[in-house]
Amino acid sequence: MSVARRSAGADTDEILGRLRALRARDAPTHGGRVLSYVYDSGRGELDELADAAASLARPLNGLDPTVFPSIAVMERDLVGFTRRVLHGGRSVVGSITSGGTESCLLAVKTARDLWRRAHPEGGRPRLLTSTNAHAAFQKAALLFDLDVDAVPCCENGAVRAADLVERMGDDVAMVVVSAPAYPSGVLDPIEEVAAAADDRGISCHVDACFGGFVLPWWPGLPRWDFRARGVTSMSADLHKFGYAPKGVSVLLHRGRRRHRAQFFATTRWAGYPVVNPTLLGSRSASPLAAAWAITQHLGERGYAELVGSIQRVAAAVRTAVDGIRGLSVMGEPTGPAMTLVADASAPPEQQVDPYHLADALVGRGWRIQHQPGRLQSDGVRIPHSAHLTFTPVLEQRITEFTDALRSASDSVRGRPRANARMLAAGLRALGYGEGGRVPGPAVSWRLLRLAGADAVPSGRPMAQLMALIEQLPPPVAEALLTELLARGSEPR
Ligand SMILES: Cc1ncc(COP(=O)(O)O)c(C=O)c1O
Image 1 (cartoon, rainbow, N blue to C red):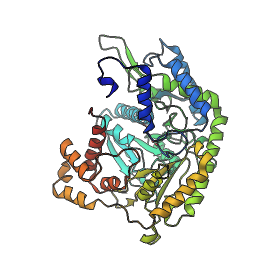
Image 2 (image 1 turned 90 degrees about the horizontal axis):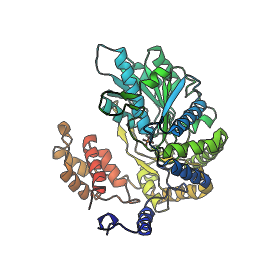
Image 3 (image 1 turned 180 degrees about the horizontal axis):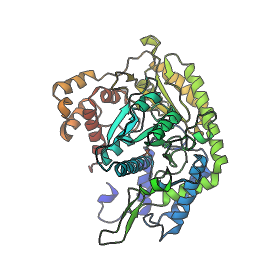
Image 4 (image 1 turned 30 degrees about the horizontal axis):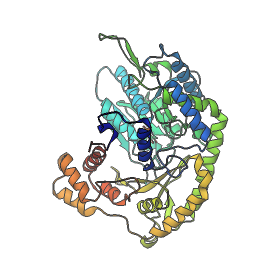
């Protein structure tokens, strides 16, 4: 019986025992076996320090740093550390947010507000991105009422600067480039795009949520941070390669005026004056304190050492993949990610399908991330793939991983990719996807059951569900996925 359903409160040991049992069914968060979502430095002392700092800050409310000045001090230190490693200089200021999505949302909101100020005649601003830019920018455009203009990227995940520059116009509130892009691990042509945006007076955001605490120590890169002319804002997540627990990111702006446009302030209600730099009102200071403690402990040198591990892992995996028949790396990744695709130059019976590979790795104790392929507006298809995020801890068992990669590839080589065309065609025949028609909750659930995808417990093969997602019109796929997630947290 669920603890919450009991009439009397449960014993603390029992509650924690139950939570431990629930957690035992989760994918492992430590040890590097999950190559997405979690970022393990491999240094246990960092987790202990983070827990102690988070616990000290737990009762605080980040809503008002004038009442709890420790929050302002920690924010100041974190913004200072981040702007230093991103070469921001004294004119760069910023805020701590709850994560990458919030940093991206606020960057867009800020650019939109500045654009509106500069365009009193009105109109609808455009957010210029690429198909590689994180989905958070689509969310931002939806929430803040901008049109998304996502230019197609090359089949190998690279974005051409000229494609973005060509689309720059007076209605563009902001152009987004990534350092690197999550789906491909490729570094966008930041210098060229930012300079062109600068020449036209357009804001340019570098989304370094993923690479912001890795690339500063990665050798041989072109200018990708505030050293590049025209970069007006940057996001960098402390809860990724900053190794802090979830709930903390940094958003930096070039210039106070831009930063202040991020704020919401009002004295126009019956209560206390509300001044929020972020989307939330009351907010936890625990992730902030944990991130603060970790950066104080690691310093730039500590981060540089951890990046050394990531580089060695990336090199070892690259060598392994280059030696696997039928499998290849998409494009030229820079930093802590790599994307695996079937080698299209090999005959079908020699190809390693990335979805089957990902599923086969689960049985060997490893998780890599399925990424659906995508037909872009220019007709260029980005192939379906598997994403790998490399964390420092993986260096400790790199041979085990590359052996697993080889044996999993051998076990699926030549297996044709999963196909959900029949179901997708059936849905089309029923009119779903036509004119924006999407199934409601009951039909979506029935369809998921039909596809055998109504329960995707941790570790179950995903190839079939992913094939279905790829082959359905996006609004239908989005309705099915919404249903899948929503059902999971409905009370039973
Ligand atoms: C480049 C990039 N931007 C933004 C985000 C969104 O971050 P979050 O999941 O912390 O909201 C991610 C997450 O992976 C990312 O890789």
